Amino acid sequence: MDLEERNKFEKQHYKVVGGHSAAKICLWTKKSLRGEGVCYKEKFYGIESHRCLQMTPALQYCTENCVFCWRTTNFTEPGPEVTWDEPEDIVPGLIEAQRLLLSGFGGFEGVDEKKLAESKNPNQAAISLSGEPTLYPKLSGLIEELQKRDFTTFLVSNGTNPDALEKLEPLPTQLYVSLAAPNEETFKKICNPLVACGWERLNETLELFPSLDTRKVLRLTLTKGLNMEKEGEYAKLIGKAEPDFIEAKAFMYLGGSRARLCRDNMPSHGEIKKFAKKLSDETGYNISNEKEDSRVVLLKR
Image (cartoon, rainbow, N blue to C red; front, top):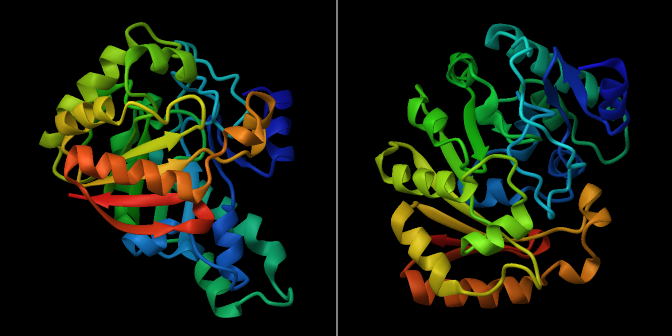
């Protein structure tokens, strides 16, 4: 990563570690420290928002440029010239980055000092901050390095690298795969794949899903006017993957997405609930939880 690119990320409050990794304090970590609420992942899955390390080992690399992504989507695939950092160097660097990013919270009115102290020793890694983490060829080692430190790990992938997911050992505590389209036409329109046969690769991942012995989630990022129809087609893809959970989650009008979409593309929580009910009818999955301020509904097998 050159200096100009590094400075761009630092100005957006990322803490860059090595040549391709980064941490950033999540909005919900900040809210939790101030007693203003917690992430839906805490409500749904029990992880503590204030102890979550939001990170990536592939900051600037992805296989898609999705229109709804809140990052600035000028992603590329890594070339052969990339020198990949070792997991045992990345993990301590990310933990230290988290501590540096949190250092300004001390002494502020409303900040829970006990939570702040705990937050500097994170125990959950959300491998999802930016880019496609399966492009990091030492991802298994990264997960293992985190597990050595008693971290739970939530890995989020767009599903276009099934070979990497199949080879993962150990597996993360929870594996998310993004399912943002019910069919290939919609997929190409909103995910803008940078790889050939992106839709076919995603379907390979869905077929692989049942064999992966970990907690599995399909996350549907729903964008009004683009992909909130054809519940029956979504149901066929879900039936292929047999996930433990489905998250019906609204696109949020944040960050880089504001240059590509408008506020009207952001569904209300009521619209997400209506979609989730139709999806429940099509799949047999039951609606088990929801979080209105995050505009997300959880369906459970």
